Amino acid sequence: MAMQRKIPMRKCVATGEMFPKKEMIRVVRSKEGEVSVDSTGKKSGRGAYVSKSEEAVAAAKKRKSLNTQLEADIPEEVYEELLRLIRREQLKQ
Image (cartoon, rainbow, N blue to C red; front, top):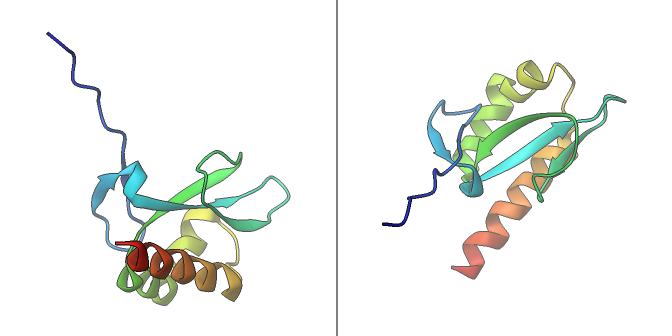
């Protein structure tokens, strides 16, 4: 009898919904305070997860939920990169 592997779940900072980690995008703040999109999910630092939807990114930006989670100012480029990644994924489907 094969054991079912537990799927790691993460909570979206924008919507508060839980999703499998693979279905989310991680934004990370390094020790130096630099905020970046972590597409590999392996960068070290404090991470926060956002659902792969433009609505979630817009909500995170509006509510500044990433700022709160990462205790840092989020540059506009981070939101733009999140949207780019989401749109690229949507094109593949």
